[in-house]
Amino acid sequence: MDSKTLAKYIDHTTLTAEKNEQDILTLCDEAIKYGFYSVCINSGYIPLAKEKLAGTAVKICTVVGFPLGANLTSVKAFETQEAIKAGANEIDMVINVGWIKSNQWQAVKEDIQAVLKACNTVPLKVILETCLLTKDEIVKACEICKEIGVAFVKTSTGFNKGGATVEDVALMKKTVGHIGVKASGGVRDTATALAMIEAGATRIGASAGIAIIGEENHTESDY
Image 1: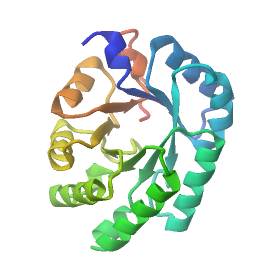
Image 2: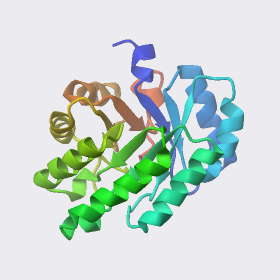
Image 3: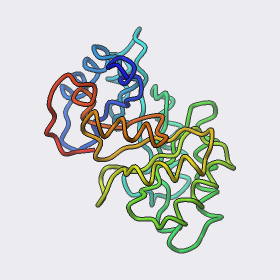
C-alpha cells in the first residue's frame, strides 16, 4: 500500500489536555499536506479547525463522553449536537463500560441510540475500550452497534491501560461485518497500521500519522 492510500485511513489525532491552538493548527496543516482523512480533536477546537480546513478535503472528527464514557446519556447527546453545530463531520463516542460491567445492556443500547439520533446523518463511531472488556463483552457490544446501525466500532480511547490489538480488531470485524472498524491506541508505525488493516480495520486513529505513512520517526506516546 502506498503512502497516499494509507493516509486516507488515518484520523490524524491529538487529544491530550495540554495541546494549544498552535498544536491544532499544525495538526491541520499536516493533515492537508499528507492527505489524512480527518483530524480528530477535542470539541473546543472545532471552530479553529473548521476555519483552518475550509476549502480542503480534510474532515473534522471529535470525541463525545471522552475518555470515560460515564456521562449522562443526555449530556452525550447534547455534546454531540453542539459539536456538529460547531462543524464536526464525525463523532467518536465512548461506550459506558461501567454499564457493560453491570450487565445493563439495555442502558448501553439506549445510550448509543441517543447519540446516534443526535448525529442525524453524521457518522458515529462507538469506542468500546476493548482493554477493559472480555471477548464476550466485545462481541455483545459489537452486536448492539451493528443492530443499531452505527458507522464504526472503535477499539480504544488511547487513554487507558491498552490500545488496539490485531486480535480485537479481527474479532470486531468478524462480528460487525460491513460496519467500519477503527483501530486506535498504540498504532505508531507502518507495520502495525498495515497489520490492523489486514485484520479488518477500515480506519486508523493515531497521533503518529506522519510516521505511519513513512515520512518521519515518531516517539510521542499519546493516543
